Length: 135
Image 1: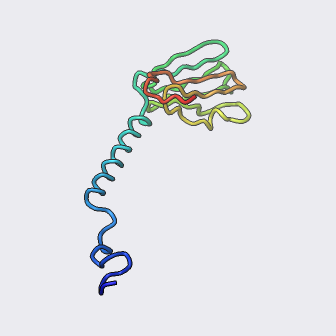
Image 2 (image 1 turned 45 degrees about the vertical axis):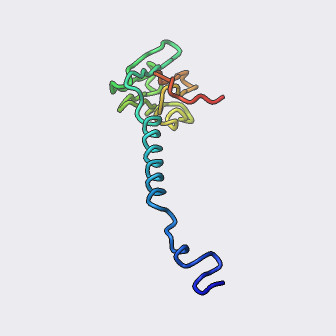
Image 3 (image 1 turned 60 degrees about the vertical axis):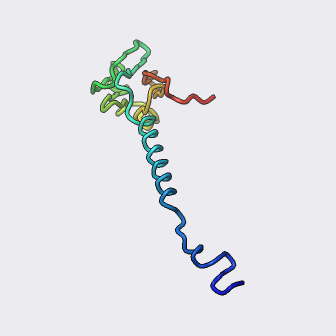
């Protein structure tokens, strides 16, 4: 071994930065691309989406971009549904387990909430061509 040279090479080689400027640029571009794609996929719902509420008596359709509160059935203990900020969710229900409330807001077309004790089924309808379907 020559003087000033370790088992991994000379001292100049050992002091190189782990990431070069090119590596950092490529990494930043990849992270930015992931953020943009995630925003497009998981962002707000299509403004043309419809909220479909099925009850034992009827089927109701409402635009997702118009805020409103809907009582699904005549019974005041049934599901109280809120449409706001391009999202739909159940905010009150007289059912015992309240699973429909814990489902939260529907994130994209093709998703649904069901309140089985009241027979209420809520789905978000819209363009599902961009969704990834897994079988």
